[in-house]
Image (cartoon, rainbow, N blue to C red; front, side):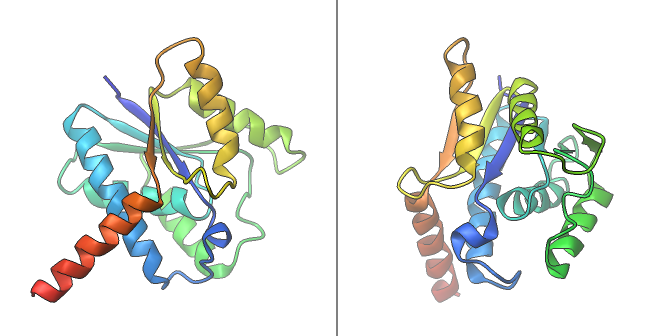
Length: 186
């Protein structure tokens, strides 16, 4: 049973998203909500992200909204280092601070500001080792930052059962079509 699930995906710029008002965010959140609901109904209790801008923040927001229907569900934010948001745009910082304030658990894997890429590798390895599976918004035809999490997850898969649950572009297109159909059916 998957009780603790890591969630990751692309950064906003990897998706061509440069505003929190981009319509693609709603599609991604709906896809995440659908998968997360299924996972919760199968026994998931915790969702873990590193609080990175993009899919991880949006997933965190989805978890927080799902808590209304599933109050037993918890959100953990494990940042790779202190002040990871220091270079983000203001709107992204606001979303980040809001999520941190409402999360059930917040900690930094290295309790110091950024020093080297090693801190990011430590974060990926640590989160993969502390979770039962990975939910990732990722399309193998469009490589990006999720590759690093996937390397750690696939390494763990070599030695034990560690499911990787993908939300790819076809899943996102299906969600978009469903949302469009619902809009026109009203």
